[in-house]
Image (cartoon, rainbow, N blue to C red; front, side, top):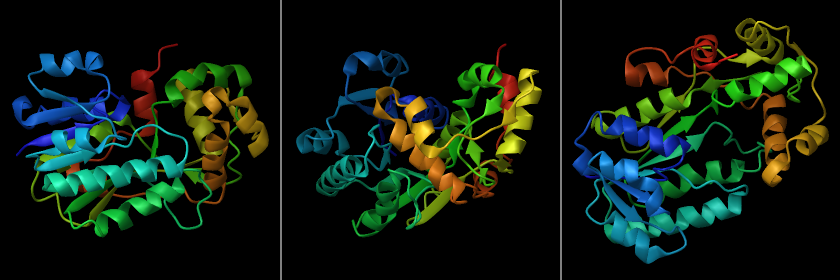
Length: 286
């Protein structure tokens, strides 16, 4: 089996690459990257590197040739139109290159009534893949737990979680657990089923008071819950013009649209995902 991973130098893609080469020969894996100079670790691991540009179909067709499994990790953009346009290029190139199977990253914020800025893309993804004529599988992530680690010092200083979540809960998964499940699905014929959609979450979701309690225990400092408004949250965290996107995600969370719990991770890996508190204790350094 020959694999290609897009975004293999990004946060999730890099982890998936590292996990996949534990399961299959590294020589069977190709990383599709925008900047070759950032992929030296991939070359050092014995894998292949192809330069791709999501806006240049020819680069995609060349990279996708003779690939049995295309692991598609979308590029980081803040609006659904950009991502849908990118997906269209990927699918057209995959059709022309006769890719055997697409394994794509999804997200739980994909409901029809979800106000998250990228919800339209995540809702479009399975429908478009279903119409592509290419066998496909989707792995949907819950929210990544990882950003909570560097966020803890700010929460300690604020003494409160400020997510505008009302009384609703969030579900989480770590990058490490997500990438392990991605790689396992990619490398296991029985799991790589056409039309199958997996949802990766921990075994428990958390209301904001519950999350604050966990964070307090990990930090050894009292953290409560005092939400700000959606507009305030967007203003506070508007670095890189991401404020509206982030606030729209918590708008979705406050409507109960980000609280899904699934046992798919356990079905894939044979055990539960690492619980949130255990993950934070493992990764947080005071």
